[in-house]
Image (tube, rainbow, N blue to C red):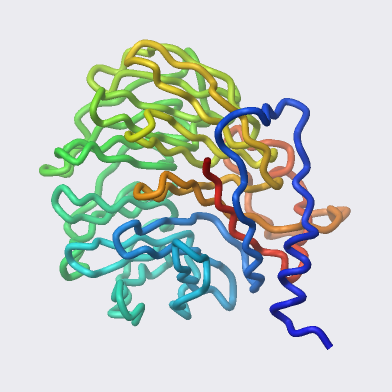
Length: 356
């Protein structure tokens, strides 16, 4: 009889990558590896720790946990049990990590042992770890929109109201934080020292339902990936003026920027990952649309290798009707996120590595 690991490997090799009609396969990037890890539970974010060479994959549900995988081999090297959350990240300087479960879980970044649970208000979802002052930002669609934790001891430093549902946040590393407000077609500007919102950039003329945000910190350029318009709105982080916008796929849920290659990436649930090249601070183009398995809608960047990691799973047929307590889809959600949702095929959860 084949061992479970051999069966999983065989299944992974057989998994099809369906190429959407609008995908542009020619280009420098491709799917390098599909690592089938299996396991139960839903999933949302994936986060790379380039310094510690780990990848954090959150699984939600009754058996929720954070799986920790080696960033170079994708072999599992640890696990944080009893943590049903959206995602997690670590601070190399303090050696502490946080997961946006409720309560928030604080853990040791080397042993993965749980240090403590932190009661916060709202509904923890997205997150940002800012090395500027070693603060961890817990994002919530419900008020308070942002809860700020001290990386050193997990104490709650305060909350920030941005007047809407935050989806992704980025830092310039020098005291400025930007947060896309998904239901307001806007980007909040936050002073990291005072923990106050100091401005808000309106992007409604070009896009709405923005669920991904990336930053070219050197040139102060923001990339807002928007669901409703299926486009990337590119704007100045200095004053918010819109430079241009470019098409992306359907169902984006994350964006990132690689300063080494001057490329922005946006992942979509329709089975595409868009690469936008910054030729100059005023010139941008779609460099490539990489085909991926469907629902690989979030992403993270390994800054040391330039590789992108995303996660997804295989799904069965859509049921006739949703359960009475089914969660409501976010604004601008694509068709596959509305109505009854297909069940995940057991054992099909997988990690994708994308690179040149």
